Length: 265
Ligand SMILES: NC(=O)c1ccc[n+]([C@@H]2O[C@H](COP(=O)([O-])OP(=O)(O)OC[C@H]3O[C@@H](n4cnc5c(N)ncnc54)[C@H](O)[C@@H]3O)[C@@H](O)[C@H]2O)c1
Image (cartoon, rainbow, N blue to C red):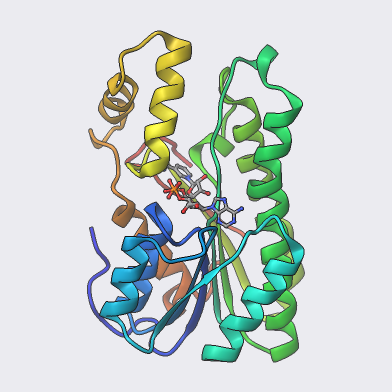
């Protein structure tokens, strides 16, 4: 479901990483629909078709900045570009992420380094650097980190990815406590199975290791959701708007499951 048009984030300045596709692009649209100014960050030099559509639909309210969350210099640059264009950042949607899997005994150092570089190190330093600006600017901002149902429970084939998403739960809690005296809220969203470009890759990997035909894993995980289907990227938008808005002003250090009932808390 889309969060719909409105003014729940009127004139807030949001920075979103991994915003060229999937969940990031859907949340950027929802933030723009609610009146925010948005800086969309992703790897490619030019905006994806989805990002370009948002820039055209919200002239003057959205910009695209190429950046790699693995590079400290890029993080400093895209934060500066966001603030030079729109002013101090009020909202961080800390979303850039990668997936990979293999049986535990084959989950090697290269996979560990690749996933932790983006999902943990990149996400942590994007958060830390944005928080430093929020403290300096005395902004009572909101950070939303992307965890996952995979961060709640290990999986035999998904050890490294699950560990990265568990790490984001821990960083969310620590950062929320560190930032509480500044009035900055830090929460996380734990999506379940969401039908994004990432899932093409996920499905193909499960097909390889579980001897399934392509598309079979997607069908299985969708059917196993209590609500009966995989989520769409826009299914994350309502929670992302809520946690960024004043409606969530007394909510911090929490991880919100948005998963059709997969995880109960
Ligand atoms: N799709 C799901 O089922 C699901 C479930 C739980 C959590 N998540 C998490 O949600 C977030 C978004 O995932 P998605 O499904 O929309 O995936 P996606 O692949 O559609 O989008 C991820 C985006 O991050 C970008 N990105 C990757 N590495 C980057 C880097 N180094 N610097 C900047 N950008 C980078 C990619 O280019 C891509 O546009 C991820 O953190 C993912 O782990 C997804």
